Image (cartoon, rainbow, N blue to C red):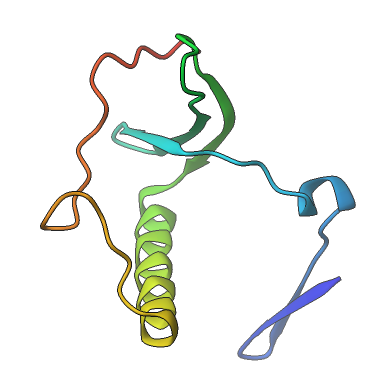
Length: 104
């Protein structure tokens, strides 16, 4: 059981053994509406024409922005410890893969 303390509030977070194993994904597709962000995590396998969504996370815009900040903070700390993460695109933006068609 992990604990997260913020101010005087304490939140206990339970992590089951199954969830703790994690799910591998090598592609994320992000969509949004006026009220939510949808993150689909996908595993692409070379030579297989169809990819399956492994997990879908739906966030409010406020929580999506918090996730953005938390990811940036963690990438910065990772790079401070292990060196710069290299991406294929010079500005760090990796364009989406064309031709990906999702089904809900």
